[in-house]
Image (cartoon, rainbow, N blue to C red; front, side):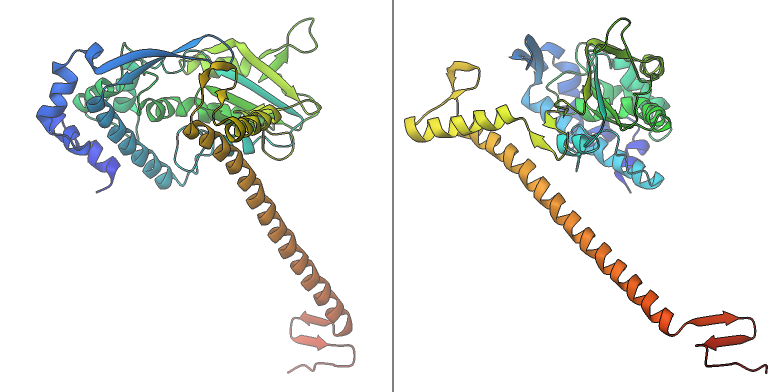
Length: 369
């Protein structure tokens, strides 16, 4: 029985506990005996462009339950897509075989690249939405008691917490209907569309960007606003756009999608390469280095290894892409050569077939039977 079938057959806490590899008493203790605040600890991390992001990290027991639920739901989503023969190339955040690389790759070599963020993405998906999704969605259609338990595992302070292992997959499931409508809008406007968590990206090679997705602000030549078609779909899907994080990127300037440059081939920002190189130099010459933008905080070898690994991943991706293209060009050349040879041979020995007769060259004549 598939993971989806097992989940749909579940009737209560005992069945859910079995699916996530916990005893029923252990799951009940974490969900109902412990207080919500005792299941999480909060802290803040700096955002890339200023300000702080609040993280609600689950305690070890709940974290293990959430991670196992995330794996279960990921299996279910893949089974749904396989049944529908749907490749699901829209959403790329926190999914198997998807990454910021696959997300950015859809928007290479485009005249326009338009980015917009969803406001309070995780927090806007509350307990009721999660529970209602698992009950009403036709692919899941879970027992109400089971849907309530899953929402209880996933939610904290009436939303999906940033820091939970299952928040990404639950948010992807809830946002899937929006994704389908936005993809349909984009296709009708000759655009590509992808989503990475709360980051929506549209791109096109049209001479002018479609106004149903984005329009120039009145009296401005550079400020862009979300178009009526985009706004309507996001609103009816229960989300809200962050007006302060809307930007249009043109071909003649640097275009960036999920932290990667997409003007031609995928690349990391030049500043990132230079910073990483400087950290390596500092480590080799002085024996230690500081994190970029924070001279008071020493960096670790693991952090530097991660940065070098990221640069290497992008370089390897481009090398593989170049290799595949070279192989495709070689195959096309071989096919073209074969076609040319075929044309040359047919010009020497033409073969014409008609009803009742076959002519193989001008010097041969067929006879009626």
